Length: 344
Ligand code: DAH
Image (cartoon, rainbow, N blue to C red):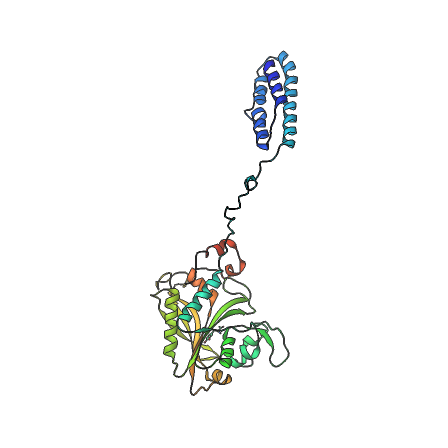
């Protein structure tokens, strides 16, 4: 044991290392679990008590020497150069930047726009901060309609005849289209809308809608039905059926709500369609003559239809997302799910 101790001591004194990696290798060789010094300590346990006194001290000195040397070498060793520092090669391609992807609401919006573009619709946009006239008055809302209440609408200014507010629907853009565009009008208006709603899985205070408007001579309810059916089949698949339920909106007469056959259970009934086989996608109707006249269109000569849909709702149905809040929280795990969806 004595010779071994001497030999290791000599080895320690002569030890030279260039890099941190070499220092670590020397440490493991000497002091690691299976290292030479550790092995001597194991042997030490088996020797006679007289010898223990002599070798105990020597072994402790050896261990201290080894530890001191390792510390010394470590402080002077150079860390291994990073791969990029070894040699700079200007001909190598650069590091790729991770590519983002479009937000699912943008993808759905673009898909809706593309479908209606194919049908010959133009795209129009209007202001998000609107006045009462374009959001309510010109659309035949009675003066005390609940949507005109502070409870439901975010007002920007109050107290005068035509207050400014955050538009509660994109139907306001149909009014602007009727005011400015030449007849016939065939337009869709995508955009952001705001309502004073508590945030939940099914409602949010900010969301997106697409409004559609077609005005010409002799436009009938049959044209509306056909436009919606073609849209639904493009959006949800060629086997999709639609059904219309009578409804009421101040700006259309008659009005309807449209359901599509559930694209998950194909009408058999599942928990997405709550067992009915149908999913509501939009509201629509024939533009009320009062609305045409308010924008200076002769309601005796012209007629038209309008429809409005929530983009998040369409996206939820298309991709079976059950909580609206996913669209606003920007959780990367959710957003990455859509990285391969490219609008057609
Ligand atoms: N503006 C309605 C809403 O926000 C949606 C709507 C319903 C628009 C019927 C229309 C329509 O153009 O005809 O709930």
